[in-house]
Amino acid sequence: MSALLEVSQLKKYFPIRKGIFGKQVGAVKAVDGVSFNIKKGETLGIVGESGCGKSTTGRAILRLIEPTEGEILFNGTNVSRLKPEELRRFRTHMQIVFQDPFASLDPKWTIQKILEEPIRTHMKLPEAEVKDKVANLLEVVGLSSYHAQRYPHEFSGGQRQRIGVARALALNPEFIVCDEPVSALDVSIQSQVLNLMRDLQDQFSLTYMLISHDLSVVRFISTQVGVMYLGRMVELASTKELFREPLHPYTKALMSAVPVPDPDATKNQIVLSGDVPNPSSPPPGCTFHTRCSMANEICSCEAPEWKEVSPEHFLACHLY
Amino acid sequence: MLSIAENSSSIKNSASKPNSFFGLLFKNRLAMIGLFFILFWTFVALFAPIIAPYSPTATNTAIKLEAPSAAHWMGTDNFGRDIFSRVIFGARISLWTGIIGVGISCCLGIPLGGIAGYYGGKLGNVIMRVMDTLLAFPSLILAMAIAASIGPGLISAMIAVGIVGIPEFARLMFGQTVSLREKEFVEAGRAIGVKDSVILRKHIFPNALAPLLVRATLGLGFAILTAASLSFLGLGVKPPTAEWGAMISEGREYIISGQWWIISFPGLAIVTSILGFNLLGDGLRDVLDPRIRTGK
Image 1 (tube, chains in turn orange, brown):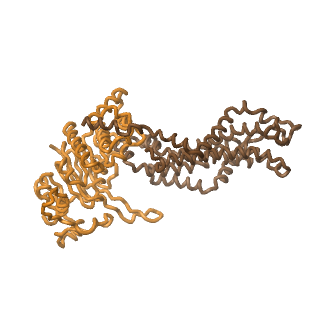
Image 2 (cartoon, rainbow over the protein chains, first blue to last red):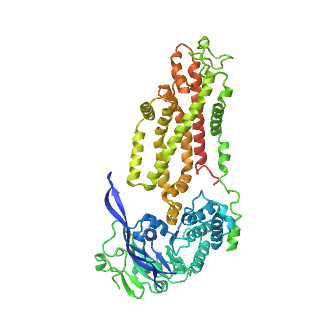
């Protein structure tokens, strides 16, 4: 299968301005040269600490945040070059599910209106058909059509997230960015929403990009996993391979931090010292070398190349 | 999955709409006093020809400067006009100036603030700096300058009052828009491909409505006062039209000679109408404050 989405050298720098004339004195490199492909029907999971640029990457692909540099090819269309009106129409192909189901639904609107909005924005349909579509969407995500007349505050977190998913599905997109879709939910509700997402993927042959800081969530639903650190992708491999044999020291540290539900299990946790460096002045060379236990001299002066160490396993580390 | 849907029907069935709003407002005693004054003056303005015993402009020098009596409840002025009738007809002009003035402020200030807040950048900066410039003038001085340059009259007083109020609404809407712009439901609208103008009108404006409503209510009182001040200074309505500010202006020389009623009754009318709008505005602010509203 060919790649549905090809992202290459995606960058997003947020300028830091100072003084009354707003002179630019630096930049926060939120995303700094990220490249990956996602094949049709697959799911790419992106993991990393808070502030590593996961969400910015997702939003830059949808151009909810304008990328500073880089190419985004979606099914042959260069998304990064679309003009505003072209982009507006193109949005039927790519959608997003937000992290916070309490903030992503307009509190003044009924569910009916919220779900009608995408349909009315892009299609001219008779009233009855719009109503049918909304009822259908609600059923698809496990709610009932009588919920349509209610307001968002009348629903629980899990139900709201279902509504968020329904809204994303309303335009029949091929690709959905899921920005921490379950991290605001209870663990018991998380699995329901994740199962729903997986069912919908099969049903509508969707392609996902799942952003999360929870490795178990990513493992459950992803076919590929990318690990990000300080705006850069450090490792990218199939889920099986990454969890079987993580190569990058940062990935190893992340894996070892996952709690094991066994009190007698031997703990050989890799504890990283220090904090994530300031993204406005990242350390030279490999950005991870300040916290890496295996760092050599070369790591502090030369940035590691992004290379394919084995088929479909990409890595940026001097050790391999 | 069906079971989840069913369970939800029991959740918060009672709070289907923010219906606690009026309940809380009615419990606010000061707001109710304010509402009473507003309704009272609205009623007076609507039925002025029926209530007023005399014509507001009919002069009769035989009965000039008469003290309040059974025939003339509030006395007569230096032309022998019935002050009671003039105060009643004055309510029409004052309420109209307030409504039109605040209307002008809202119609221009809210879109300007919304556009400046939503797009930001140079455009937003230019708009907001112009607003700051307007705010830098004392409001009455600015209103006088505007009214004087258009030429005195009721319409120019309304326009002046309206323009003076624009920056207040623009600033309020600007602040609301800047904070709402970052909300995920606005981002969701953009992700869907909703046009900016629709996002501004249908997502941002309704969510910014509460503070704007409070501001508009308070603004009505201010507009009435400014219009009365302009008339007092001779920049508002022309004589012989009955207007509270103009009546005080005309009657001010008779205070010393003891004819207190000429200015006292229109003054009382100004005080009660402005007090009404301010009390209701304060009450609305309290009721719409989410920290006080526990019902939601």
